[in-house]
Image 1 (cartoon, rainbow, N blue to C red):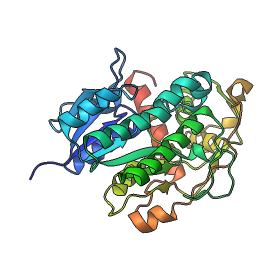
Image 2: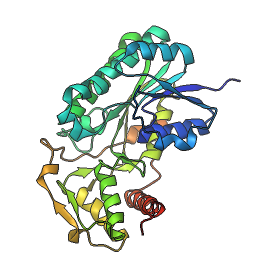
Image 3: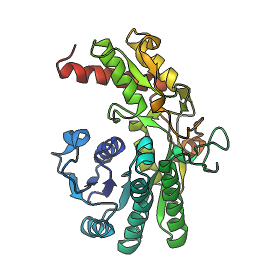
Image 4: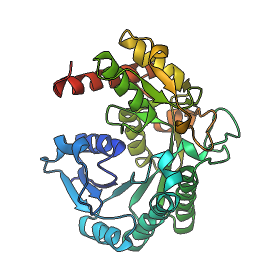
Length: 327
């Protein structure tokens, strides 16, 4: 029996690396798509690159023919679209590029599937940032969207074009509305990793202060390794649908600082400095997801709680710094 094949766009990102690991454990042949660039960072999947079951191919969400060629050559049964311009603050500085990748890029993938093989099962990485100025608390699959950033707006387009192709062309197309999910593989520009990395550096005497924006902003933070399993489960169901994936708990940036610093025996108030340049032009107030549908229909539940996640990240940052010769 031949292996199932899955194409993963954005495989070099946090989610792509965890999803690739998970799919390889399930016995898949994984085709990882990367952009044609001289600066692709393979650090997150370096430990997988020697595996025969992983193929890295060049393609681009801005170039539909490259997507068609990959689908024709590798004939995957599943496509996971995780590639996007995914850093919210950058979306204000590069709103058009964000729209090209994060919105129109989804359309190009879906249309490539429609042209090459409409039986392919498709997963779209939607985002809790689509809820933005929340219309209800907690947020479910039926909560109206009110995005508060160009990134959130682009994700709303990507979400609805997925629904549209599902209903117009009868594609098996799902959107996972994932709330914030973090890990030691998260980019340092994201606030969770910015905090845990700074706490580790302060503990080792490498810096003394951490500059942050709004400490009262609240998010529903989970562990990325858990969330990629929900992506896979969505494509194993009889019928395609959309699902909120979240922990159902909300925590502030202040709490994040408290957990990370106190874990190292530090008082965050002695080191964290409020800097207005890190405030967003339009802030998302209170994101907290209701993942009841994912619990009941997919059988999915998170395995790592918020304090456990932050401690995991702090430990990884300490180990990485010590490996580099610090502390």
